[in-house]
Amino acid sequence: MSKFLLSLFFLLSTAFAHDHDPGRNVDANYSSNYVKGTLFKRVNSFKLKLEAQKGEHYQNQSHSQLLLGTYYLLPSAQRIGFFFAENTGLRHTNDWVFENNEWRWNDTSQRKEYLSQFVYTKKFTPHTKTPIVYELINTYQTNSFNGQSSFIFQPNMHYFIFSKGQPKFSFRLSVPLYYALNFDQRSIYKQGLYLGSIYHINRHYMIALGLKQTTEKWVASTDSIEKRPSQDYAFEETIGQIGLEFIISL
Amino acid sequence: MKLTKVLFFILLFSTQAFSADGRILFLKGKAWKNKKRITKKTQLHYGDTLLTDKDSMLVVKINPGATIKIKPQSSFKILAPKKKSSTTYNRYLLKFGEAFVKAKRTKTQRYHVKARNAVMGVRGTQFFISVSNLGNKDLWMCVNEGQVEVSVEGNTKTVKVNAGEGILVNSNQLPEVKKYDWTKKLNWKMQGSYKDIKDETHMNHVHYDIKSFDYE
Image (cartoon, rainbow over all chains, first blue to last red):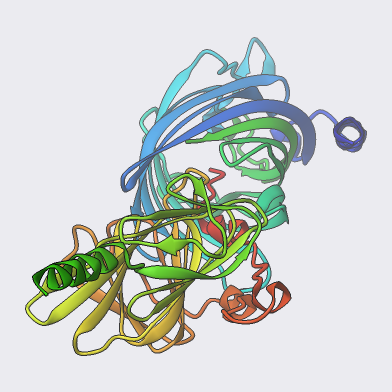
């Protein structure tokens, strides 16, 4: 089943894929993959989180993230969280450069960037008979590399299938919206559609197949403005990602 | 004459010493009292720990006025009562599993059921308690009749739970009182055949708090 999904996803993604060039104002589609491991550890009212992710962003741009932090559990299914993440492979507007007489993206696979996140979440279970959890995740994020701040509004829906009193499978739909707070992007510079199918081995160990589609809106880089001042640079880049995720909750 | 009196008092004291503090009203399947198999004639005493097997059911009457229906795979201890002036505090401990409790508080008799870090004070009522033995700290309680006053260790305040309401205790914080849909499926009957009194509520489903699951 997972093999079929993987093949189908890649076939669809590559069928629409083509090279992009911001200078030519062409939208683009890519596919990539990732692997992610998340460990949660509950200590009294704290839920510690350690997450490691490795994969590709955009077109063959390797990416990694190591995140560490904690949630503090509040009454009524609310949480606040503080997280610190080290990233490589992130791409920003000014990474589109004109060098040696050609346009290209900077290779950022070795460039380290540090992100700080403040998160507030709230879960809702309005249906007493249907095991669905609605969740709102609100994240304020700053990147120390370029001082950019953004706000991420992420509504989620999670549906559980129980077997013998324990969750066996669950499915998650997430629609994150990324707002640029202090940098030269459109207000919503990125939006996503994330699907997760989670197999619950038991209460502590889970394996998930993640499908993500992210659309990012780009504006002109400094080089673009200098070299092609009359060009309209607005274009969108859509990335399809398939990932294998491991979740441990202790 | 003197010998008769002595014999009479010896008999009276020995009867009191060995008189039962409770008895079995219903038994289906295997159950143990202090690790010894229970029969329908087994007498119960303060300090006894009752354990039920998979697919078994035990209903007991404990003096002076409590009736307890103990579900399968549960451990229930009858603690010795404590007396303060003219009031007797009858105390029970649900170590793990599930039990239905029916008792009526009077001026001189009070009933307290302890489970995990919470104490349920009976105020003339019938209620259900479930303590997970699956490694989490969830304690569920819901009330069918009357009112139950709940206190949580480390917390000086109490919360009152009325008929039709329930609570989930999984920390030292006072629980939120809510109406839970699953409580409607509970079988509160304590008398009749096994078919009449068996309760098939799958608490594992209830014990798994879907809101506690974290994905990111």
